Length: 328
Image 1 (cartoon, rainbow, N blue to C red):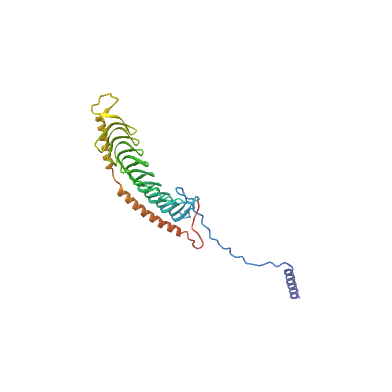
Image 2: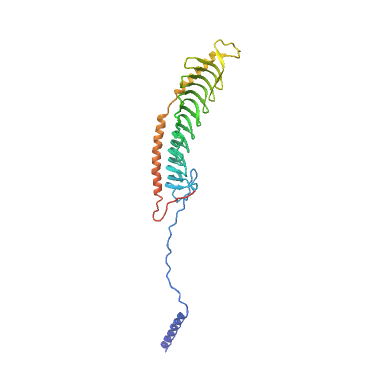
């Protein structure tokens, strides 16, 4: 009797469960599936020339990379601790490029600058400026080869103009200053002292027709004591004002006379001019140093191009991931 009651109760429970399943809406049954894992993209490295990079400790800041700047400039080459260091090429948007050595985000060492208008520099740099020895070819056709300091021609050098004239001598802060000799395109020559890009002090000017002036100069004009010699042997000596002889000299000078100057003083000025001319022709030449600097600059430029190629190759997608490339 007890077994019959148990079976009856079990049958009733099964029937009730079946009825309940049929009356309720059917729900899908699924096992939990693992979510796909996405590879975390690396944050771009923000580099800028001369500033510290903003990168995490795990982001690479040393190697070969490409950097694009918001103004359109592009750098391709080596980085060290987030800054342009080593060899690399910097492209200035629509204007030119630099190929060569870098230290801490600045030109430093040897390199080559090329600009869209046609000017070009090959030589040494320091702290982002032309410094040392190098050659600059202007877009006008002029060429300066010599010493540089803080971005300007400074020291000994040669400036050759497009028209064939040439100056060999000393420079200071970008202009002729000190001793030098200038060969004009018409055949005239000047040898002596310069000040602020002009003949100033004592010097000798030789004309192509055989005439000569020896004496004092002021801002490019004959001024002071001097002597003008004609090719036929005649001379005019005395005091000059704005390029014109205004007071003759005389050997029988009367002290205090307003109409003449002591000829011996004029001869002293002539001797000073001749000594200045001799020194101007005897200044040191730096051709060998310039040639070595140019050779080193060409070598550095080649190395920079190789580094740029390596940096560009690292930008090629690998397994769907691009290497960091940021715009700053």
